[in-house]
Length: 203
Image: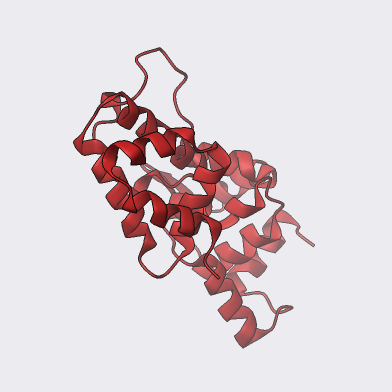
């Protein structure tokens, strides 16, 4: 069965440019979020549909196109997936009003995972993570990253993986975790995660 976001995405892509912009402007933010999340999760190329929509809106920067792009940009910022789309010169369609700076992907990650905020200094001191120019670097196995963040409570469960992947440059963390558990069993953590559990005194 086609996901709600994918169906709406297909409808949008079939609309003429002006109607497309009008429709996006009318959509609730929660539905725009669903469209983006479903496109990113799907393996059938629907992310290309969404990219085409962004590019179409950028060709004709009228008021409605700018408004539609602002909505897509705002939701992408909250989801931490700005890097998946080329929004071009953002100032061309942002409001001219002074606004607070948008949250970075790292800030969204720290917000979504309160325990990670508490663990951050210990993980950094132990060399498990490093701060780099465009995010954070994970210095242990990808499997350990999946095990660690899966263990933590996430304020927005439907965003559990996408922000982590964006910050650390990973792909398919959930699949990595499932593959590890199929091979090793759910109760047998990876060697790197054992180190992290000991460092942070995780049960």
